[in-house]
Length: 500
Image 1 (cartoon, rainbow, N blue to C red):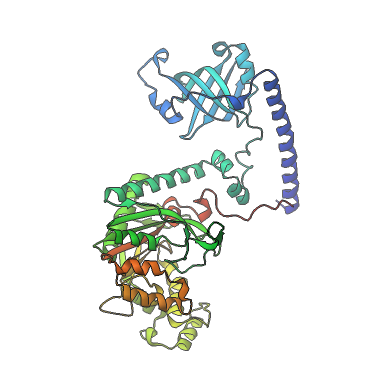
Image 2: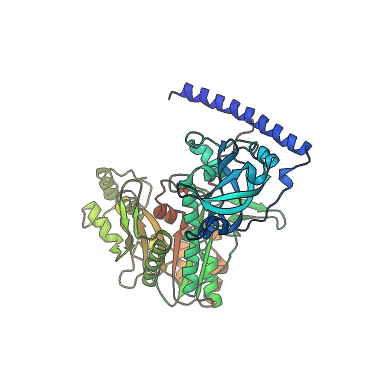
């Protein structure tokens, strides 16, 4: 369809919407004139659609079937003279109503026939099965609970624009069963993660979103001003430093699942506001975190999805069961560059090699940053099956312990699946003097960005610990087969609609 035809169709659809709005508004005004206001109604719901359907008993006569009271939004209406079939949708799913004039009375049936798609109604009745085998409520009474003044999008054509889907997610969830299922799965995934961690003795806590110092990660923060204290604060870019204070306090297993804010780019895998799980466990290390993340993801797969084989939109099938690959960062770099002397090369030699590898690299970067560009652009996208990439260069993270055998690397892993990082984990640095040195090396002249209170906490003694962060949105992308991070966030960040 040409852009001109699309524009014409959009204008016609808008005109039609305005006409339908006027018709529905007139119906509402007529009801109010007759002393009925649907917006002041309520309903005693006894069962959801799923619960009601589960009550039907095959070996019981219709007259002895259970009575139910359900409520939801009208999605389909089939008026057939003196009887009608409609379907409603509630949080659990859909259920069919059979409405007969002789059962509810002439007046109630005439009012029923004036309902519109999208209206929210409640109904009482008993269960039976139609000739096609569909469990249905034989309605004995009903009530309009909310009038939909604007029509729902057409099922197949009315909500195809991604911008509208993200801005009007409520319509997407009404019409698009795939979206409903994905967000139901997201909720179930979060529930199972929490239950898994609670079962392992972890305590869930909440830490500040407004922080005086944006610490725990290298990212650009959002800045705000607090009038009461007359000073600037930052929306947190990490959960780490406050959770480690909890380790100092004596809480040996702690986690938080919270919102993180980074004032950076938007992409298929990035949203400025996202959900992060961070957890810390005393008396373990990064290898303990390996075991934990494998157990946790496999538990979630089995309980929520019923399988450890996850098909992706590109056709890849990711196997999350069994043993996961483990390989060092250096091994991957040497394999990708085919240069056994890579880590002793000069900056200029590295830049020349990147050109031959067709990797676009900023020439102002330091050698360890150039190397990490090779990893992120050439290697990470190829790591489809679950892979623990261990012992990254010490310059990339100031919060992990330095490896005793090789002081140039850290005791860490980055878990990569389907070409992206899902979870980094560390043997946490608990030496206050080494931690200060690493903070200072990272901060350079920006010494005021160092969290001095965190260093003070370390001086009171933090137990040896393993820690891990899990990008919840990326994990949901992986487990649900979504194509875009916006498809896993109910209300993703969008530019405000202009009012001009």
